[in-house]
Amino acid sequence: MKIPHLRVLWSFARPHKGALVVGLVLALLGSAAGLATPMVTKWVLDSLGTSESLAGPVLTLLAVFVVGAAIWLTQWILLGTVGERVVLRARETMVRRFFRAKVAEVAKRPSGELVTRVTSDTVLLREAASSSVIGLINGVVLLIGTLVLMSVLDSVLLLTTVAAVVVVIILFAVLMPGIAKEQTKVQERVGALGGVLEGALRAIRTVKASRAEDRQSARIMVDAEAAAEHGVRAVRRTAVAWMVSWSGIQLAIIVILGVGAWRVGEGLLEVSSLIAFLLYAFQLMEPIMELSQNMTALQSGIAAAKRIREVDAIDVETDAPGAGAGTPGGGGPVLELRDVTADYGGEPVLRDVSLVVPRRGHLAIVGPSGAGKTTLFSLVMRFLEPAGGTLLFDGRPYGEQTYAAVRSRLAYVEQETPIVPGTIRDNLLFTHPDATEEELRRALDEVRLADKIDALPEGMDTSLTSSSVSGGQRQRIALARAILRTPEVLLLDEATAQVDSLTEAAIHDCIRRRAAEGAVVTVAHRLSTVIDADTIVVMDDGRVHAQGTHESLLVTSPLYRDLVEALRISTVPAPL
Ligand SMILES: Nc1ncnc2c1ncn2[C@@H]1O[C@H](COP(=O)(O)OP(=O)(O)OP(=O)(O)O)[C@@H](O)[C@H]1O
Image 1 (cartoon, helix red, strand yellow):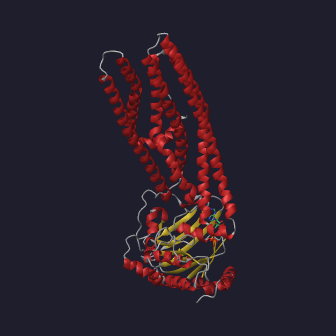
Image 2 (cartoon, rainbow, N blue to C red):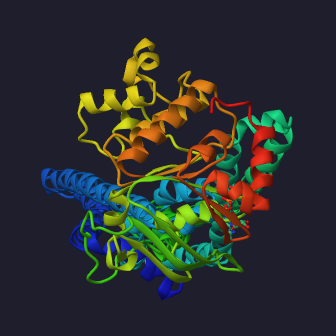
Image 3 (tube, helix red, strand yellow):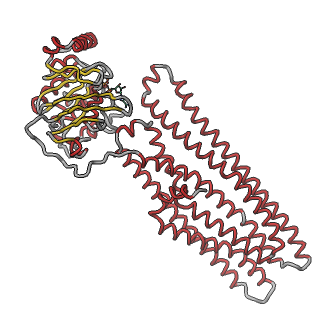
């Protein structure tokens, strides 16, 4: 096993080194008690033939047994606790990192795969980072101790034992790496399975609509079957290793019995020594078992530790040195983009975009699919860093402000997943957990949801995961969350899906009211939203193509005319 691999594991165990040292000492003391037992048994047997009292040796045997049991109990609890702490810490580090990570870093990985790192890889780490190394050291000490004490009893019988032990060790050395490799593959496949399964369950409606249930199950089963196949291979190798070792030791015991009996007959060995020797031979499986089990745990633990440590490489959002909170309410525009270019690692998807968002009013962004509207929002929310150009909030570049400072002054309603797990109340309180009941009601009134939610048996405490809240209502809940406290800029990525007229009217009114108090920027997919805007920005192929009011753009921009025509056709005539 290579040292750098162990170092990864050690990085998890290091905070608990005190407990681990105590665990090692206890393990060694426990082994010493185990090693002493056959010798004390011999003492008991030797006392039988003499006038010596049996009380001494029997009490000693009892004491060794009690002390040994107490040591094992303490060590088990101690190391078990360390293992759980290691798991907890690893989980905490990963969970925190996921949420501090840059959006692109999380978005590019299947989330189910990230979840398996937190749920299942950490379990493999438990044994490896707590008891494995101790078990290995202890196993070696126990094995050597047993052989040394055997040699004290009878060196001829020892030869038989050593031969068996050597065979067993060679066998394990040959089979072990293969077992570990198979187990690593199992983990990788389970990770891949988690990734695909999570994505497929998320898209359950599409799966069913496409009648792809069986195909999707089959695709996931490829990973499940591969995991099982590797698992079976590991089990087979382990079983062979155990079977051969166990048989080897049993065979050695039979030989010891035969040779020992002959030597006793010849007067070369005492019966008590033969019995003690046999007790050691019976115990021999213990260190071998300990060595092999811990070796396996260590290897799969190292693989898991590496997967967990990969999470550390995920880039996190870090505020620039000296970045501050920013000062609210200057005189100029609230938001400004100057020659902003952006990409996702390839060709630019936004080129030299300049835009001014006034402190009040509604600015709608329209454009064909792929024009870069969502990317523009990602830049404003700092989910994405610009490749060139500058974004300014209140006249100060984004880089001079912290992520939290910028976001605290923006409210964002995303198009696809605007709801977080939990109840309606949890969702409303998500941005401002300290909001009062009155504020919640006011926000719900504004999006015309108060009556609907009052009519639910559990009201605001209705769970959104299992509720009968419609898509349009979900959007309105997200909007209510965004307007709970008047944001300086409200960013609304309108749902492309058709919504009911009540939702449309509610959103519409809400935008109008908010635009009177602050800035509202929408990625507009509905004609009513577009027409109502004070300024409309037409985007095409990553550039600002035109800008103006509905009337002026109808005259100056053929692209805008086309877009309006398309929206007119695609939307149910809206209350304009
Ligand atoms: N995460 C990403 N990685 C790579 N390319 C991306 C990513 N997100 C968007 N793009 C690309 O950037 C371009 C702009 O996409 P964007 O989502 O901003 O457009 P949009 O105007 O919002 O489109 P739509 O109206 O269809 O939502 C597209 O060509 C798209 O393929």
